[in-house]
Length: 324
Image (tube, rainbow, N blue to C red):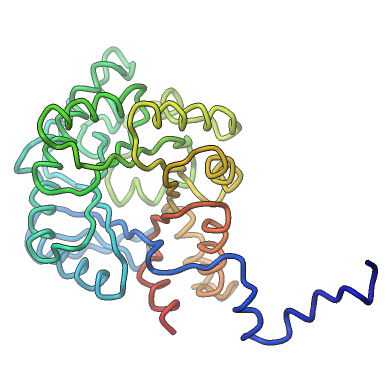
C-alpha cells in the first residue's frame, strides 16, 4: 500500500523500539583481539602508526590478555616478532620460539581464552616474504613444509586455532595432514582464505617488521579487483579441511564477506586490519570524526555483511562501548 498506510518512521520513534526491531547486533562474543609479542622482559613499545597498540614482551602480553578476557573477549590472535631472522624463517618453527612460549604462558594464566596463532613466515624471514625465496621467486610447494612445522609447534604449545595467512596453494591440506598425523586432530584451522594484496596493511608491517625487502606480494595475495576468485580460494580451503575461513581486509571487501557468508556453511571471520584502524584513529585525533561512533559503525557493518568473528585492534575499546 502507499503512503500514509506505511510509515516506516513509526519503528524509529525511540531507542527502545529501535532495539526491538534491530536486524544486526554486535557483542563481545564476536571479537578477537590481535597482539604483537616480542622478546624481552617488561617491554611495551608503542607503534607510532597504530595509536594504542604496542609490541609486548610475554609478561606484559599475559597481563593484556587477562584484561581483554575480563571484558568478555573470548579469543586472541598472536603475531611473533623474533630477535633472529634468516632466509628460511627458522625461528617460526622453533619449539621454544617467541609465539610458542607466549602460547604456553597465556594458557597457563588464562586457560579458557581461545588462543589463535598466525602461521606465516614473513615476520621471521630476512627478506620479508611469506614463503621460501629462490632466485627472486617465492616457492609455493617448498614453503608448505615450513608452514606445517610451524603450525605443529603452535599446536604442541597449546594453541586452540592455527591461522595460515601466507596464501600458498595447498597449505590448509598440508597443515591438516601434519596435525592429524601427530594426534592434533582437535586443533582448528582458521584459514586466511581470501587475503588481498592490500595497501591497508602498512601499519601492521611497521608493527611486525615484515615489509618485503624486494618486490611485493601480488604473486600470492589476491588482486583487489577479484571477487569470484575469492570464492574459489574459499571453496578450495573448505575442501582441504579449513574449519573457519577468513576474508582480509574487511572494510573494503564487505561484498566478498557477504558472498562468502551466503555460499559456505562453516563460520566466516573477517580481519578489520591495521590501516582501517589507523585511519579512524588519525581522523578522530584531528577531530574530524567521532572515533567511537565510526568504530562501532565499521564493526557493525562487518557483522552485517556476514562475519561471525571479527579480528580487530578496536576489540577492547568496542567491548567497553558495548558494555555501557
